[in-house]
Length: 204
Image 1 (tube, rainbow, N blue to C red):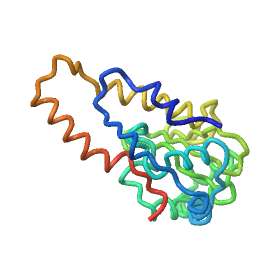
Image 2 (image 1 turned 45 degrees about the vertical axis):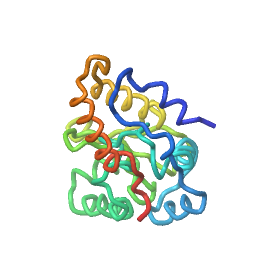
Image 3 (image 1 turned 30 degrees about the vertical axis):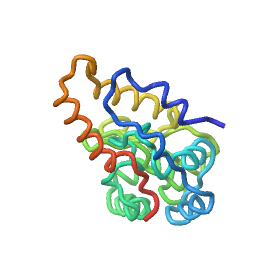
Image 4 (image 1 turned 180 degrees about the horizontal axis):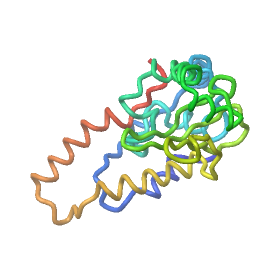
C-alpha cells in the first residue's frame, strides 16, 4: 500500500506557497468508490483506488489540479460520467479519431477509459485504461504518432510526483525576504485557489 500523503509531502518545493491544509485531506468511502465505478463506467483498483481512499474528496493541497482532471474545477461530476460518450461521438464521426483508437487496439467504453491528466494548453493527455490490471498511464498526443494511445512507463504516483515537483517549484518564493503585504496576497490567493484545484470532482 502506497501512502500518497507521505510520498507527496516529500516532493513539495522548499518555500512553496501552494497551500497545504493536512486537516482537510479526505478520501472517498468504499461505497462512494463503487458509485464512481458505476457512474463513470470504470474499474478502480491498485494505485487509483488507494489514492481515492486516501485523498479522493480533498487533497489538502498535496495535489494541485492544474492538469490532474479529478481535482480541477472545470471537470465537474457530469463531465466524468459523460466522458466516454463524448469520446465515442468523435469515434463514430471522425475517421482520424476512430483510426487512432482502433490502431491502438482500444475502445473508449469497452476498455473503460478514465481521463487522468489534461492541460488546456497542451495537446497531450494521459488516460487510465481501467480494464488493464496495472497502474500505468496511457498517453495520447494530438500531433504525435497519428494520435495513437500508447502505454507509458509512468504510474499514477510517478505522474503526481512530477506534477507536484513542477507546480510547487514554480509557485515558490523566498519567504524570509517577502514583504508582509506580498505574503498576505499570496495567502489570500492560495486560499481561494484551493477550492478550484484541491477538491475532488468525481461525485456530485
